[in-house]
Amino acid sequence: MFGVTQLTNNRSIPTTIRMLALAAISAFSVPQIALAEEKPIFDQVVEILGSERGTVRKWAYAPKVAVIHDGDPQRDQINALVEMVNSQIPNFPGVGAIEFFDLSQYDRRLAGNTHFRMPTVDFNGVEGSIVRALFQGEEEEQNRIVTGNIFIFLTGLEAGITFGALTQSTPSLGRQFAEGSATKCYFHLMSKNDELRAGFIFIDNQDARTPVAECLYEEFMQTLGLLNDSNGSSVFTFDNTGIVRENKEPDFRLLQALYSQDVSAGDEVEKVAELFLSLQ
Image (cartoon, rainbow, N blue to C red; front, side):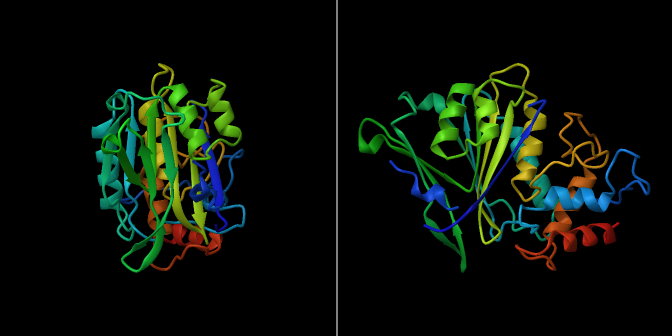
């Protein structure tokens, strides 16, 4: 086993598992003077991008997205979001593929019959990992295997809790999710040497109070390396206020800076903050 860093976040408008123990773009205007109660833009970027070590984390290879859904798969929105990221972030390695798995096709209980593993995989000479989810059938030929690097769980609360446990994505925010609090969606990341290896997004799409579209956008963007919220930000979506922000260009410009050819996983976050400001 090797050490990983695990990161989790949420939106407040909302078998052993050894593998998971690893440890925008047109011009936009950033306010020149931040509001009195708001941090400077530089500090907001540092807060959003910085790991607990003060470094940035990013994908070194194209992550595959796997959508496990029970009900509406949000296919159109997910496809559009992936296309937007691929087209607007020139140096992002791109999303390799999207696979959808309808849980209604699986008539066995999840607990005891579902397993997640993360073997090491070679991505054209780059060491990485792929998450392998096995939905075990009554006969071996009935097994269903779903693979991906970023898993989006669009399910009810009970299934979401089970998947959170199976993927070891149940820290404090996972508990809030399980308790039925205001946390209707959250994400969890795993990395090695500041390179992202796995992302898990949990959305309770069976609760009418869940802002599914907003959750999908925000949690997915954060699994790409926008690790945190900057509370009260008037510039970025990642502000932990639940406000729907129409102008998302700053979000994409931030990803553009993160995935610049001049930035490597593990670089100090201040380097990316300076690059972000220089891109305007």
